[in-house]
Amino acid sequence: MDQKIYLRLVEDKDMKLLFDWRNDEVVRKNSFSTEPIDWQEHVHWFNSTLKNPSVLFFIMMNGEQTVGQIRIVLEKDDVGIIYCSIAREFRGLGYSSYILNLAENEIYERFSDRYTLKALVKENNIASQLMLEKLNYQIQNNDINDYKIYVKIPEIKKAIYVCPPPVE
Image (cartoon, rainbow, N blue to C red; front, top):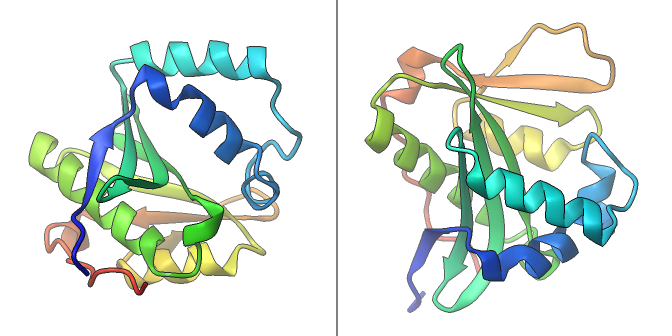
């Protein structure tokens, strides 16, 4: 793989790209809200999210190619809630593990071991469940029907896993 894979902060120019990704059928199917998002709603959400100091929001790049997005909402109880999606043309190639690994490294470099990372995944989203388990996330008991909660527990998160590059 000749190109460099990295995270960059989301910028204003990413608004339309993120709108398209959010309205992708598979992304909607795996989201809390499965209905399409309209443009004005997205603009409001996007602008408020970019201004929120408790949100780390990244685009994953492979060279000059945009591959996916990851957002981590830092909550007051030292929990970081993960939201992630990969562009349609890059799904199934290993990028989801890679983007989460890069975001974990970013969080731990910025905040050491302060934040426990948490992901809420639909029961039928087997690919995300397997990816989280591969990265040492543990299932946490919950009372939410149709969802599983995965947590990166403090003892495991200290050993940062380095994913191999995605398969092209």
